[in-house]
Image (cartoon, rainbow, N blue to C red; front, side, top):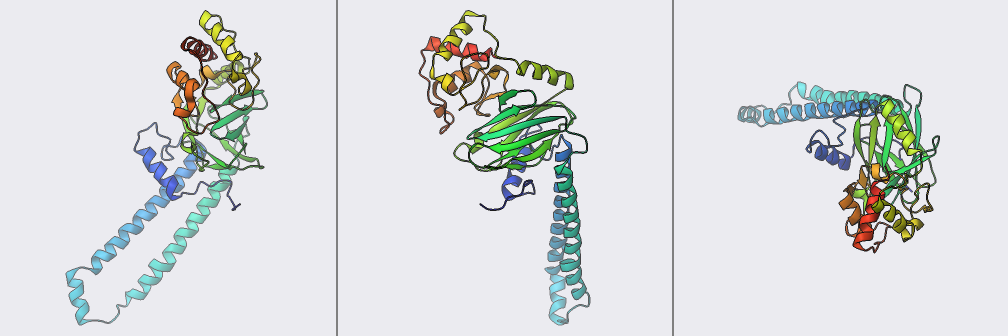
Length: 337
């Protein structure tokens, strides 16, 4: 296996295309050029430094080329072929001194930013464990005994430590507006930290090709104000709510008597499967299928009926249900807030 950096956030061609494409989509796009956390601010500062230096180099080289091809310059060159006195100094200055100075400054800034990204200035407020699967994210809060999927809730303004492992192949955890990339490598636990400066929902993405549905391996970091975050923690730590409506009660019966219980857990019921995501509070999540669908009743029905039609290759098989049973199961799951 080739060597990998834990913080592989220095730009590559693919990452640059992602950034530029995201920037064109509007302010809600997950762009490193719209940082909302201290880690992302450091990375954006380095990006802009490289951009303006590159732009200056292009401008200077273009100007020299234009000067060199001017008609007057060509005519004088035919009469006087002696090398100008300043030519040697220009080569040394432009080809040696300036590149060495720029690269030295860039090297120093990179080391400084890598150090800052390794450890936050403030003490860690919360620990979160993230496990990568093909193709979804398992989220654990070990100190609170909470297990969820694809949505990571954090308190605003506080650093959160993230422990990264994988259940299968290599993945890469990236929230462009909050921090840089860190790989999830089999048999190893990598650590990083994230912090959001203001409340909001920040889209994250697997940034390492991991198979057929790599592009549909999305997660969301939800930065909540402290009081709302505590409410979420309290609610998420509880078992599933007991349904009260007739349709939802029927849906619970259908769910618990189907093959779903072999793969999914719903705390407080007999569903204790460990293959797929924990569904205890699925009704409160942003998406279905790790960003494949927004979480709506109609989309959930499509996912249950035949998830392979919208996310081919995932491990969930089609679930044959009658229209009435399907409607009841959707009502039950959507009520699990």
